Structure formats: structure tokens, C-alpha cells
Image 1 (tube, rainbow, N blue to C red):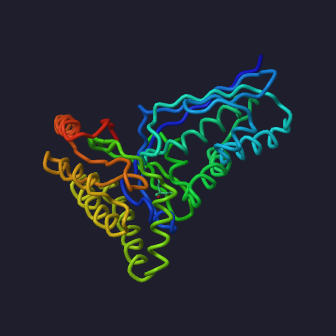
Image 2: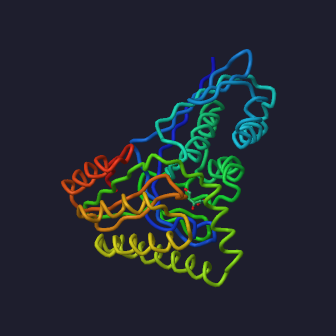
Image 3: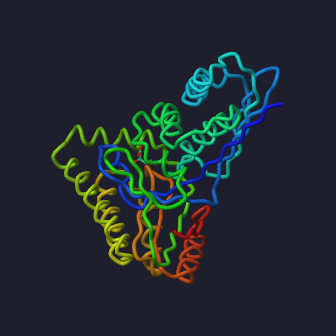
Length: 306
Ligand code: MEV
């Protein structure tokens, strides 16, 4: 019996979501404790089983056409269009919370197929396949999430869609909190596109500044300057709010983190709900922020070292 396994993790945008869709850079950190695991084994009939779906390829196409398209492309690539298999996907990444669950889904499936066919993949190949599902899911996807859910450290995702790992030589923690409200990335991306179309000068200016902030953020990480990096996160949040993707509750959670000593904080991912991220250089402060967020009603929160 043949078997294949693939895994990917969650991510949090530290700087540059949305503007990255317009070709500007972004800085994105992996969240290694939240994972998505895919297993494929031979079977007489094809069955896809996930946390919220169980059915055939036909049914999958109806519910999750991005993943269906991805599977068809993978089977063609491996010259096995008639293969019948059981694909099982299990995730503890909350979905629709700006944490990259859809990218992790796609990447883990691509890796499981590569493992099943004993194929040595490159990150670029995994990226190309995973983007089939991501582009279908989000309407327009920058691809930053896809690299971040494969990376072992924070990445600088540049305008050529290349990802380089940023090395930090000082202690840094991010606290991520799920607001408990879903935020659909496709809707948020569409909202920004609509606003941009209505007023390209003003919204184009916001997006350009967000790109400059991400570039500056890269320099601050190289210089190990978390204080200035935190200020950039705060400025990025102001711009996200001007773009129209923040919410009063996200703003409230962000304020709480700053009150408890965060160096900077912002929403992370598409917004319109979803999650926030805060930065600190002290593990005690990270714990204090996490506890304050729980008391303020955040449904879940995590501390991650970057
Ligand atoms: C979503 O996690 C990040 C966005 O910038 C969309 C994308 O990069 O494709 C909002």
C-alpha cells in the first residue's frame, strides 16, 4: 500500500497584508504550533475527508472547487488521472481568521501527493500548485501566505514573489489573538479593490506607504530594532483601518495589547474580523498580554517566538 504525508503551519502578517496584493512587499511570520496535516493512501474509491467535509471528487468540486482544481492538476502532473485514493486532512488552524488556513491546506495536500509519488519537490513547485487553490479561494492572492506556511522563520516576501528568511538576533515574541469573528479574505480583498477603484489616488497612497513600511520593517529586523518595528506595526494598523478592513472590536483588542506593554500591534491577515498580532521583546509581557486578551473576550490566543 502506498502512503503520502504532507504538513504546513499557520502564519501571521507582521506588516504588509493587502498592499502585498498590489505588488508591495510583506513580512510574515510562521506560527509553528498550529498545523495542517494531509495523508493520502490507496483506496478502491476516491474519498476526501476533512474536518468539515467528507465526500467524492464530484462533491468536492461543488463545495471547494479550488482544492478540486488543485487535485486534478496534481493527478495530471503525476500522470495518474485515474488514481483512486483516500485523502484525509486534519487541521488545528482556525479558518477564516487571517491565519493562513487555506494556504496551509493547499500546501499540505501538495506535499502529501509529492510524498506519495516519491517526488523531490522545490518550494517553487509547491507554491505553483498551492496557488491554484489560493487564487480560486481568494479571487486574487499575492502568494505571501503560501510561502509563509512553508517557512521555518519570518519571511520578507518581495515584489518578485520571492521569499527570504529574516534572521533576528534578539528575543522577540508575537501574541496572536482570534477575535472570534470570521473575516473572509476574499471579501476584504474585494473591499480594498472597490475602494481603490473609487479613489485610486488616496487608496493607492495608503498602499504605497504600506509597502514602504514593510521595506523599513526589514531594515529594523536586520538591525534587531524591535521598538521601531513595533512603531511600524502601529502605523500599518492606521493604514489598514483607512483601507476599511479593521473593525471596532479588533481596534479594542489592539488597544489592550498596547496598554499591557506591546511594542506594536495590528490586525493580521485580511481583517473584517479574524485576528490581531502584537509584538514584545519580553516573555513575561507576552504572557500578560495573552491573559489580558482572554479576559477581554478573545476566543483564543497564542504566543510564538520569532
Ligand atoms: C491574507 O492572509 C493576506 C492578504 O494580503 C491577501 C493576500 O496576500 O493574498 C489580505
